[in-house]
Amino acid sequence: MIRWLLGRDTPALDGAIAFAPEEEADGARLRHPGRRREWLLGRVTAKTLILRHLRECGQPVGDPRRIAIRAAESGAPRVFLDGRELPVSLSISHSHGKALCAVCPRERGLLGVDLERIEPRSPAFAADYFSEHERFLAGAVPRPERDFALTLFWCVKEAVLKALGTGLRRDPRTVEVLDLPAGGVDPARALSVKLADGTVPAVCCGRMEGMACAIAVLPEK
Ligand SMILES: CC(C)(COP(=O)(O)OP(=O)(O)OC[C@H]1O[C@@H](n2cnc3c(N)ncnc32)[C@H](O)[C@@H]1OP(=O)(O)O)[C@@H](O)C(=O)NCCC(=O)NCCS
Image 1 (cartoon, protein in one colour):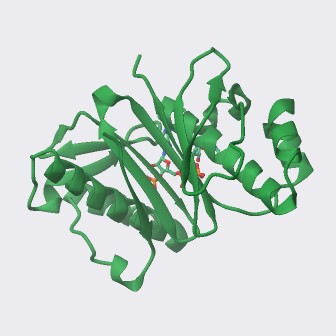
Image 2 (cartoon, helix red, strand yellow):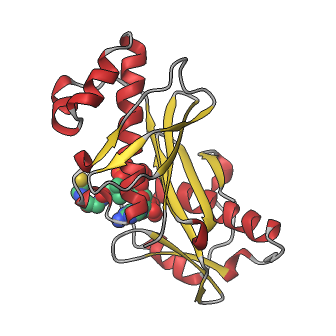
């Protein structure tokens, strides 16, 4: 089962959850206040979700300091319990005071999530990152929905690239959205997506509070 959680930045965020010593050290290394805040929001949301996941899997952890989320060299988050890596896939995205996190057992696949504020996207941005087919799909809907469609397509690409563990080190054009569901995507819909090598990830997308979001799952190779 895939579990997800949307977190919001509030004054209660500070001290909302106890961090492991190595997490405290990671946070202290972040000098830029905005970056530190988004990291904090992502970590509080992710730890809350991991604790819920473990509880619902019959493995409750009382003290949140036993859980540590550490970044791999690639930047991808990994989850440790008492210093041992847990067999889960976790993904984190933060944008404009919100964070989206998702987690699943590793055997279910590799997860990636992305969350972006819906806003106008320039023709140059579309030309650089979207295929002719994706531009056709977005161009076929009226203006406000077009902004949503292009934002959503970008979310899908980032979510898939996070599931791959490369992030934007891999060309976003290698991930192509094949359709845009008729009637919009509220609250959540499956979306047809293909990678350049033929892999077909499972992708779910949606719109929440002025944000577009996507959750992608790839089979582990
Ligand atoms: C990872 C990346 C896709 C993040 O995109 P973004 O829209 O800026 O940020 P998001 O909030 O959606 O995601 C950030 C989270 O992605 C996760 N992440 C970072 N690198 C990742 C990777 N290689 N694979 C999977 N997840 C990754 C982290 O959890 C990060 O949050 P945290 O550092 O607070 O823990 C992007 O920054 C990237 O690819 N970076 C690597 C390449 C790079 O540095 N390029 C220069 C900028 S283009």
